Image (tube, rainbow, N blue to C red; front, side):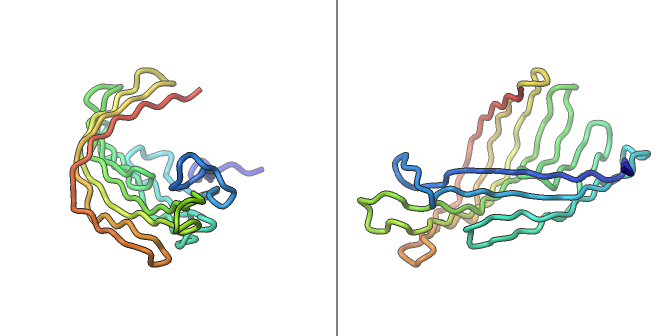
Length: 183
């Protein structure tokens, strides 16, 4: 087997239940998104661009395949540009464990109406938006991380794909708080 430090192959598997009903889990609300990507970076240059190319497969979605194309870049020891992730951001390291984050986020998701007492049972609710804001992320140890952020949500669209209804909410603020644990 040949190893090459310049390349990294990544695979993400994301099984989820996505339903708009009251805690009902139907088989058709199950989604299994997955991504495969190839990353390339010169291991001898810590400031080199990390190029990423791949695809995100979303069975049973309106957009079945989404491209993953872009780069991540460590500008300095303190500034990191992370453009290829579920939550793209630019971070500035205040300390070794605390970072100031300019964050960007997008949503392109679908949920199925599975309640039998609703007239639009089986309809797919599509949600799209874009958000941008500032936050702080802290790594307590290798297992526990937390972040808080605030900003705005823009270009929101909520619609049923079969034409039952569509809503375009006004732009608005958001506040987020996240804690993640890995074991």
